[in-house]
Image (tube, rainbow, N blue to C red; front, side, top):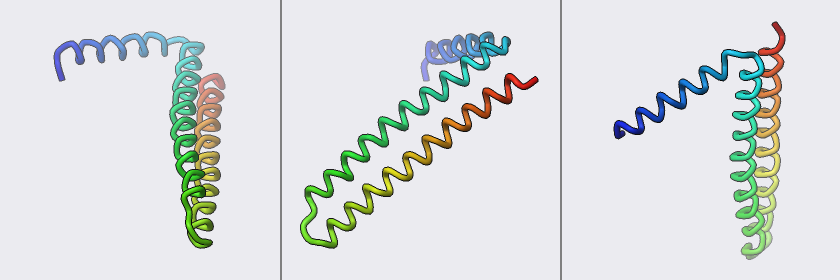
Length: 100
């Protein structure tokens, strides 16, 4: 880690802490972090889904097709639940910040 990395980290933390003083700033930070989380997780889930669907096309035999369909189902269900949990956690945090 170079000195400029440390300087940049200090500047970023200072900006985030100064934004977080105001309740509206806290809400903005929570919404930004939740949105960033959803975008990263959604992109990852979509790429994983493409791999799982591609496995259906590459499958040879009934057992391989069933495994590929099961993997696709698991990817869809798990990513949807994790993204929904992240969204509700962000909404809960916004509600907790604005409740007082």
